[in-house]
Length: 559
Image 1 (cartoon, rainbow, N blue to C red):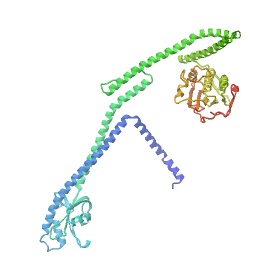
Image 2: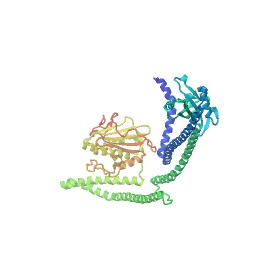
Image 3: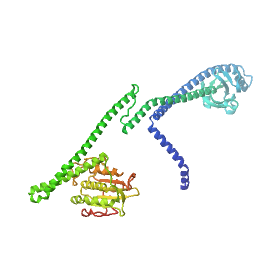
Image 4: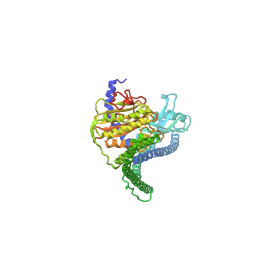
């Protein structure tokens, strides 16, 4: 059992090595995922290595079998000659001892003397062994290295069969290594005589080693050549693809005149022509859309400005009629009220159109002041107080006790919060609506949270589109124009901040405005998270609709 202290010491020792291996693995994995050429070369080499290995094993096996078959055939023929020699040498010679007769017969087998008494024959050099078995090991008479003969081979020979066996011999005075041993009974006057020829396989081993080395070197050279070939082939395919990728990236960045070079008439040339045709078509369509968008923006701006004068005249006439509505009949009095109400809506729409046209033209400017953001939040709550009262919606105001000083345009920030609160009341289904303000050293964030119908997946981006509505059949209590959130997100960007949305069906939605405390700084994070922790609970401290416009504070309120 490893002690905890020892385990910690081992972990500290091997931690740098593990981190190094992990970084190497990550780098290799990154290169593997990003490089098509690397994958092609590695796959080609892997398959080639498998094929070369299988081919080498098959060829080695076939060559080895052929060499051994030739060796066995030659050894069998040599055994026939050796048996005849031994039989002729032993016949009629019974005057000497058995050991001497065996030694003389073994000497007669030698046509050509070699090292360690070995004989050179048609099957190569060999050593002979003569054995006459007795009743026990001590009574057995032999000539030659009888201890190198396997007992299993002797059993076949004693049964009257000519047999052979591959074995490893280790003669103290001779050859060490694999050998072919051929055994045969004899027909001499010594009926139990066993004749064995031991053929060393040293030359065959050298031939096989040379063959294996040659195949190994050839395989390595072939792998190198295949690697170079596959790299060249992959490069011919990958380079045009990389060029097309770079041109596509530049085209996506707005360089609409980028085109792929067309070389030859192959598949890559047809791909380049197709890409260029697609780029040309997209360029024309984008140019047309830009022209149409600019024309539409210019038309909206011109119409909005042109409507200001007649609207002012109609407004003066409507106010004059409404001021004398007491002297009119009830139907005319109602008509004058409707006229004034619709003129208010028309004027609001016109103001929104003018504001959005300023953003489109890039002439919107900030009137920056250094003020407490709590004032903007309270002003926005006071503005939508009547909407909360009409819908019986509880407003939860959670503001910090300390001032949150920021350099902002109070009119635009108040308008953003007013639009968010009105939107939350419209879609909150009478459930509590929370407005919460927090700040850190760099930025301030305000969230507006409702528990109404929520947003479907993907709608968190669509809500900021102009004139977009999640459910067109729903009645707007705020009488909005459909441009409020679009203007709000432009105002947030004008401050260098961002306006984001979150929502789930049945869980409500949450909008977060984040602005820098100092003008010109970038916003990287936010003091408040966009996705609420608890989606079914409203805040603990709340302000009733009647008191929503006051300086309500609840430091512990939660979304």
